[in-house]
Length: 455
Ligand code: AMP
Ligand code: ZN
Image (tube, rainbow, N blue to C red; front, top):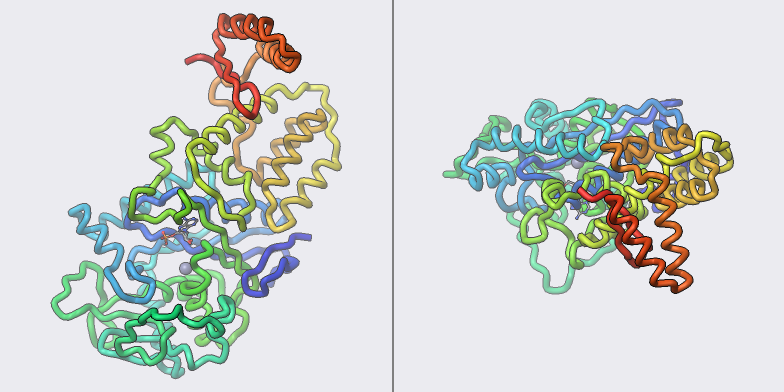
């Protein structure tokens, strides 16, 4: 049985899909006004692992991911500039060119990180009619009202607004000021915004008698309902989506469909932090996959780095930790490449692996089991291939034959380890010389010796 932590029930729930053997999931996709940073990519890697876990459990997964190419404002409280228009100004291109460019860049990142492609991609700008239809229905049902600057959802028109985020019980921080404008209630949010007088927008459509554009949340509701139906199994995103984006998606969708719950399981990935701050798309700590590649770090080493932590735990990004993960992945692949042919697999390891990933996607435990099984010589290459369906680390792909540390070098390395543990430094040094002469470099680290072929 697969258990997943559900942000809506705040418990690890047994996964029982609406339709037998099928898992329907929607993941909030990128806002394509810039490259994804490694924090964003953490969320997508978690979702990819979740999807693989579902598949491994025999479910036919229908995975829908949107591309936000309009309407996501710089401020979550419906103020500020449209991120797409901002990106266009920054780069002197049209908003449409920006969207095309960064959507492609995102898909390249996904491929480099060995993420599975969603079964359906959907762009907000390709679904304007569906969004207008949903806003119209909300107006008709009395859940929305018009102001001079847009159409807003009336959060007091439903009994349980903000239940998942426990919003009703949260006081606003003392002294905080909320610019209500013409909003009736503090949490009301924009479904549709009108283009401001004198504003020169590139992306706008005529609806509700004026030029305007969709609010950010409505796209996910309209597209998820279109592709997955009025009720489906799983919806994911980063943890920051709980209080605003997902709260608003739930409110407007359940108000339209009058069916509860819209989504059975809500899953959220924790943040990647850099120097205690969350990584943001502005500021100095903006690190992309390209940044890593420029430093010679394999994207899959980043994936391995993340899998060492549970997706509901914060992770601190440092280049030192990433370098250690990179070495760890190389060692893992090397160990796998040298699994003796005569190894007999122990099926209890496979059982334990399944149990770990089915316990709310416990990848650190799954990796620990893999390492231990390799050490105990009870894992075959066939079993690694099977585990890698979930991990997606390409564990049996070696870039070149050189990546495999040959047997004779391994023996020398082991001897040196032994010599050093016996404090026989002279022997240790002469073994190092021998290894170096054979074209390999050896490094002593707190995690032990690291060997690599000199390039
Ligand atoms: P965006 O492209 O800004 O819409 O964000 C894409 C995804 O990345 C969303 O699911 C966010 O919740 C998530 N996200 C943003 N910052 C971080 C971070 N520092 N760590 C993990 N996920 C993040
Ligand atoms: Zn969304």
